[in-house]
Length: 259
Image 1: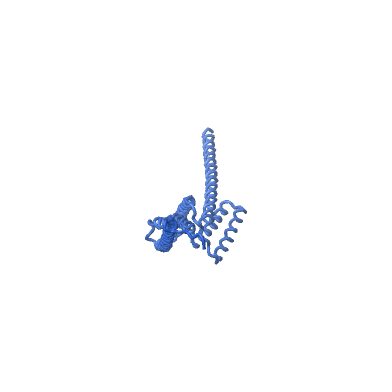
Image 2: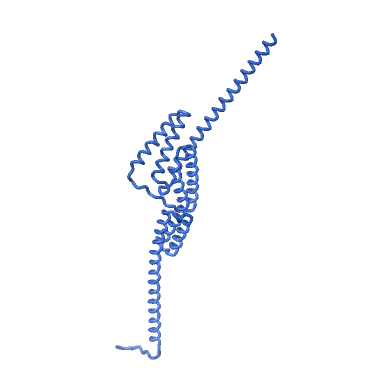
């Protein structure tokens, strides 16, 4: 009788342990699901951030199409884990936005990089995009060749950002008539491209900036020559006035009192 009781207790104890393990596994699965949903929601925000906040000049069309496509895929993963009508609606909006973007023939407008804070923020955004690309490659969402091409572009853009900022300031100086400041800032814009000077894109930008510098230097030289001629003319006029005053004030000059 005691053996039967002991056996029964062992069975009940084993069943209890199995039940506890089952509950723990179920809870762990629930927690894992919540973590995956949270991670996917975070990815949707990340990709949306890249699409909306990266200026057109730092986001080639094919890269933007890939980001749209990746966002749709993330919504699909999210819907599979946690079905929700809102997810379906958000996914549909992205699909429509992608189709409009693909069919658009309008040239995307570059954004002026007008202050250093913008450079810092956009550089951070590019760094975040690079991390996302690395993650996508690791999860087989991006092939190796495309990953390498996009990574090189991001490396190029990180330096181009600062150069674009200097070029913007140089342009503002030129429009304000401060030619020497413009030349100085354009030269700094070229210096910022030094780490990527071997890239063809950087060479093209450098050549264009050098052309602008030569044109402004010519304008500056012409202004200086005109200013010098003006100063010489004023000096000559002052000398003539001085001679005339001396002539009038001289003792040998007699005013006629009658006509």
